[in-house]
Image (spheres, protein in one colour):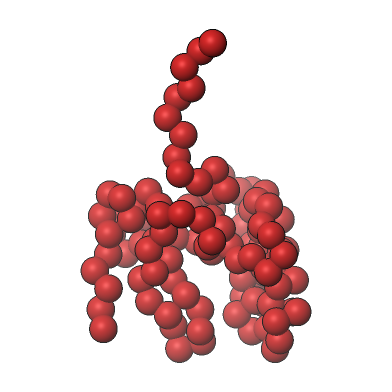
Length: 113
Ligand SMILES: [Zn+2]
Ligand SMILES: [Zn+2]
């Protein structure tokens, strides 16, 4: 038996940089649609499209987001129900900005009140 290499707490991540320009556009469009969704059904559909564009699988009603870290140029995309994430702020539009687990480990952003 070989020894497994260290596995990060969540495997449900990718990075925006890894996506093709086409998928980046799909992802951006889906996230924008989610932000403007008039109801939960539309929101969930948009989130599923965003996850699909990023090549991630999220549960029904799940959410994906891009790391909103202010301290580096991280472009991680991840399931917001994953472990080790940090909420930076909630925008006026009700969008919750998260730092990915890696950034939370390395340089957690102070949360302003
Ligand atoms: Zn990050
Ligand atoms: Zn960071």
